[in-house]
Image (cartoon, rainbow, N blue to C red; front, side):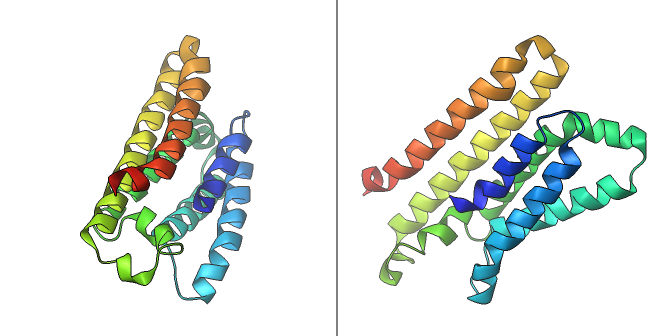
Length: 176
């Protein structure tokens, strides 16, 4: 899903020391560029707006906070960002599951209101939300228990993401 690209950019750039502000700037620019076509076609997505709002807020925080607070964000920006992504995903279940907005781009309109289409997207959105919650917790564990960092910062989150991508590609056919 292209909507995750800004988050991936942020996680890669912000993985180095004191790079979270540069990561936020790069992610915000990417999010805006990716959202423009949908805004132009009047098909905005929850994920796009949440992404832009978060990274712009993070940039503002980076510009206005003290050095001490900047150090705190340097340490916690990755698990915070993953937690915010979990909130966006799980929060979208209250309105339109964020995966449904992407699925509509490749699914004929006559299926959009069917119970199966709705169920598939609720399941996929919930699964992505859980993946992000677990990844955020792993990020906190990596900070609090540095000896686990290889597993909690990289191995577990990457395995979860790969598993989620595979599940996303297979589940709709299985659910039918």
